Length: 391
Ligand SMILES: NC(=O)c1ccc[n+]([C@@H]2O[C@H](COP(=O)([O-])OP(=O)(O)OC[C@H]3O[C@@H](n4cnc5c(N)ncnc54)[C@H](OP(=O)(O)O)[C@@H]3O)[C@@H](O)[C@H]2O)c1
Image (cartoon, rainbow, N blue to C red; front, side, top):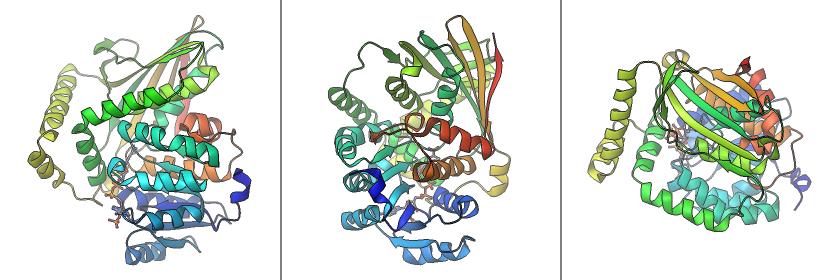
């Protein structure tokens, strides 16, 4: 199936989970920024909620589709009506697979906001081959996980010489709060360490080895990073996995590429406190009754207020080296978890639907599927990508 013969589908973009916290922000962003003539729809399990949301959106003519993750036929019907399906229905490891399967099978492009490595690996093992046959692009982690890191490394690599070994370190700082959906996904993930490792092993068994090049993302040791003037703590998120996949797919990352991913904290006591708090949360998530109590602290659909979001920010600094050159770059913006995530997610959906992109299919990262086009879109939408210094 070629991508061209999907233009007869009724919608360019369908947003599934539109009535959730990030879903609504994404729907509002699309209503405000979609080009004239874009055919798009909001989808979810509750038709009343969807109709109320459609009424509030300023854009005319937004469609409404009912689909439920417990009803595979409704997911297939949804995928068949769309060129691009964007899903905010998480935790994805619990709710996500049916829609990925439907998109892979019907040739619809798919994107999501997962930060769950287990989900990404399982979807590769189970649906990448079918998506390649139909031409569907399956693009996970299109929010703060992992767009600034994936595109930030892509941007940094392009400031360095070609054809030589390259190293990039990323240092994340942010001031922000999180929603019920994100908290539930994080807790669920902390409790699934064994399943995550099993999925990674399963993927390694299926995925072709990289021949003649190397791309690795070792966990760095905690250290004082003089190059950014902060304590650097290894950050165990999905981001390095995504960056590694981009590096494996794109020759521009050179013959021998290494990326390390850190949280950057200025003061040592804050760093120590952060590690202790994370450790306590991971330990608590192992005990089901405690996990359930913690999940109850933040309800699905809840999230930080507009005022709290307006005060939130993120900055990711990268230090890249290779071929005798050292470059300092930065990706920065406002509220990482919600306002900017909705922007990144909506722009990624628009890019898949409208931009002239490299021919790709199957499970692909944001850098591989739409690196230049999405970087440019995000810059125009107010996210900074800049070279701070070169040496
Ligand atoms: N990558 C990032 O940086 C990032 C940032 C933010 C969020 N996220 C992730 O995005 C996801 C959503 O977060 P959120 O805060 O928006 O969560 P949320 O407010 O709880 O929204 C979840 C959505 O899923 C829908 N849903 C639940 N069960 C369903 C079912 N059986 N069938 C169809 N739809 C169903 C809900 O529908 P109803 O409205 O009908 O309840 C709601 O629209 C989470 O997995 C979170 O971790 C990622």
